[in-house]
Image (cartoon, rainbow, N blue to C red; front, side, top):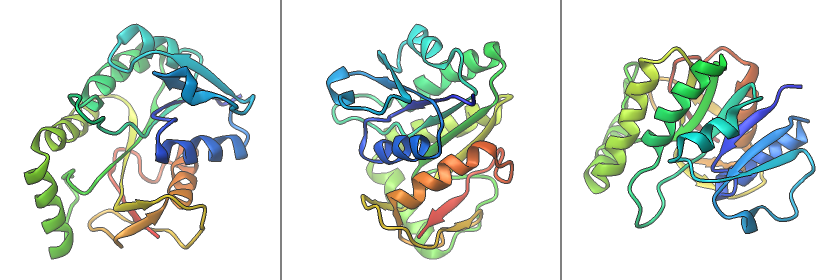
Length: 208
């Protein structure tokens, strides 16, 4: 069966993604730093305890899987983890011949196909100004993925509303189509990308 490895699955957005994967019948292997955050999980979810900064942990997580989804976000008081995790993932996935990688990011990330309107340009500039270290780490991830052999997609999100409400999802490559996205809509979109090639090696904006 098509097994999915997930990083950030115990986070606010990650929980919606794990639930959507289970709903659609995917076996899931989830990386957690604190096993207490993974109690009462569905039998389809296998837990791997460890830190995404550790290469051996990433290898243990991904081995036997067919795709990877990351909803990792910056933890308070810690240096950015995304660029470290993706560096490990690129090496491990290449060795294991796993191609599909999907992650989420914010408006601070700049991509080659961008043709942003004023609001999106300003929001992105503010993010890069206010959290420059985190924004640079995200940008580094984009550059690393572009140079890799992975079939990657970075989904750029506005404010994520932690709701099960389903709305119409809008997807654009050049500019953000809205200011908010339902976590349920976002999770469904991420999971559908597992077998959709439309946004291979692209950074779509989403909103609902």
